Image (cartoon, rainbow, N blue to C red; front, top):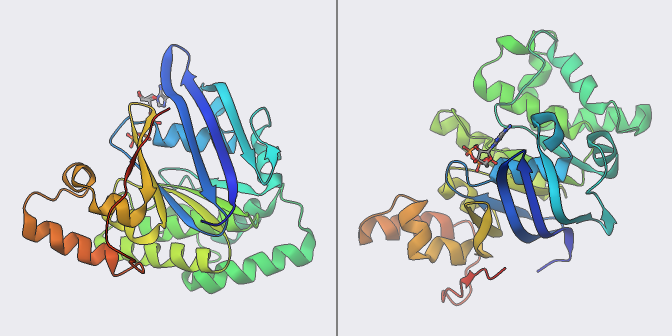
Length: 275
Ligand SMILES: Nc1ncnc2c1ncn2[C@@H]1O[C@H](COP(=O)(O)OP(=O)(O)OP(=O)(O)O)[C@@H](O)[C@H]1O
């Protein structure tokens, strides 16, 4: 496994009386895609918000533990400082600036990252290379884009800050399967270009196809962690998150996922997390 770029240790977080995360520890390797799976309310979004410093915008707070990015502590820093450090979140539901043009949304993404004009131009070239449709729609209001295009814009806006780590919250949510597959291809391309990705997804098949490692959150704690192959081979994950009931369907799902990975010996060594 590559060196970790993000290290979360014993993280606890909540919203007033609501304890959303407790004793969460995980490592995100540099340059790879790491997936976070889990059912509704498991704490996935809370984890991303804690890392990006946006928890307080939702009335939440970190109550314990540490978050370290590239050797520096992020917990205690505000959202703008965390963007400047190289971590940018694409929130669930896209949240593009609906009344602003596509071009202005992208411009807004570069604010605060302080990469200079040349850096901004390089970032824009990269974003428009990944999402040519955003160049075609540059002067259109963001609110008029389709759901898939808004997801592309939200990801493009985040990339304008030139993050080293991109946090993606449910990028496939509400999208038709073909558009979800296109978004997945782009996540792979973004990662191939050298950006580490922490991906929260309810679509476990899609997430495990993209990720090299994954964790499963249950009730605010890490229940399982391992390589994507190990998790994809786990009966528990297949039953609960891949929606696979019978053996034939299980084989199909696994074949689809394994096609994305170099599979070595095929023996799962899934680790049940002990906090
Ligand atoms: N802004 C908030 N105020 C109060 N409680 C919240 C808030 N956001 C989330 N919660 C609670 O925190 C817990 C974890 O929620 P979180 O949104 O992190 O889960 P999730 O795994 O992302 O679920 P989903 O897939 O439904 O978004 C849940 O009990 C949820 O009700």
